Length: 485
Image (cartoon, rainbow, N blue to C red; front, side):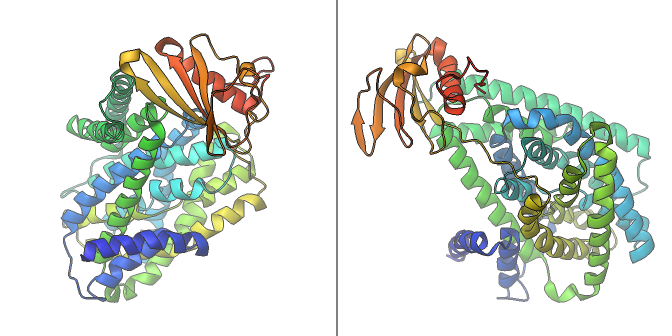
């Protein structure tokens, strides 16, 4: 009963958050705190269970993020994102740890743990905020790829710094990180490709099975990567990225299912982390958290961006936005449970400092990022794309494409015959103003129309590419160089 009420309240809080601009992270954490020791009185101190459930939630969040990321946007950004996720993390850890040791007075192990924990940008925060800000595709790709990639090296560093006994040498850590990333990348790509191939060529008996299968494949990538002593987080993100760009059957339903799971994972993770914290113990750690967060935000993040993007010659405005868009969220708080599980001395203080840091700087950065982009003149309207859902017709060896024409699509005003679909594909039905009719070649398509297109198996991809090309470039797409991607 309590769990269902908490979930309903959290869902309602999304509406409040969208109107007020307050990050949902803070609302969900607040729900957990209100239920906890200093609120209703529910006592919860199981850091190990929190870590396990937090990891599970991160897998779902990374899967949802990968499924919603467009390869066309992320491909040009891969080199910069890869450097930010490795070299940038190292720079950020070094600067933040130095501040924790020399300014706050932490010992080196504690300082390095905090530096590593807070150097990871949060996938949930980045995915949710950036998709409401119309940024240039290159910047969106860099930030989304970075948030998907940098969890892997940061987890390795936090585990290494939290292990009992002497820490490994720096060159051993670099070798370990490189090896685990390589293993995770190979497994993620392999599982994602095999999963996409299977889903495109095997018709399941019910459309509702496709979303379940996609999520199961993503979780399989994480499990396989971890069992192979690689980065499971990188594996699940890459596998999901591949499936998300493979034009799978019943894709809108799959995307909606993954998005719902992502929200559920965020709610559960944030509420659980709020339960774990004890607010009356935070007093002595507020000032250290503010100091570490200030150094991280004003010094470590900008320097890491400048160093990492030096080879790519980005304009200063884009570097400024990248510096401010290093959003932290639940990921650092989840990672702060690792030293607690490992019984690192002072681990509770580390958790408290990270908790306060995330709260304060999320409250500052999250609402201001959408306002910063227009000030830096980095807004870029997103071109409307057709909504296309494919349902396989296995026994007929064909596909049924359901096409929705958005308001700003250039397919408006195009006649059916001018679509120039490949032989083997045809528009069989148009739904307009809740009325269905069979179109003629001279029928003019309009905004808001929904089309049913039947395509044989060999021309299914070509038909979809052509539809998308006309949606973006109009009836002359192809002749005037309008792409179909």
